[in-house]
Image (cartoon, rainbow, N blue to C red; front, top):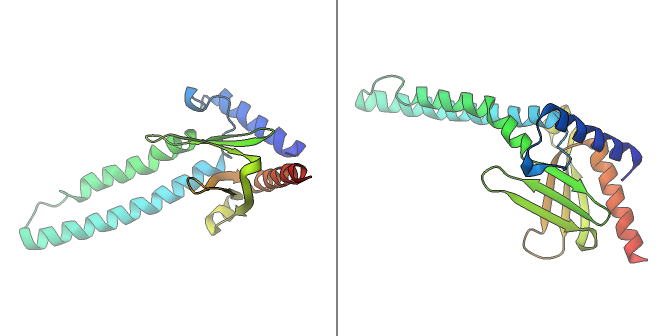
Length: 181
């Protein structure tokens, strides 16, 4: 990894440790880039809006056909939507971490179902850096690593600063080139 990417990763790690974001689950791992939390929040807002529209339609249909009391479905859906937008983004963000070692990439993710994936560089077949339209607004990218094998042959690491994702890609490519020599 380049000096810039290493420095920003260690700065991000120490910032997360100082702010108490780090837990025993992902202790010592580099957290995702901080704007990832805002991106997660935007995604949760979109999901909450869909939930509220569906709940409104369901309540309207039940009110018209069964004269149900107003708020029976919409009120619990609104409470769930508020929780989705206010609580989940922080919890999801906190449960992602990664470590780029000398010979492997480790990605740790998950809240209920935790996954700890270690990808040895010599198993990597190719690497992509992807960026969707909303990610571009936050200058974020996703590192996608394709490995040999069938189980978990694609490992994604979202929430990286675009410069860090590109630097990680170059580091992995350089390591693969050295192994081929």
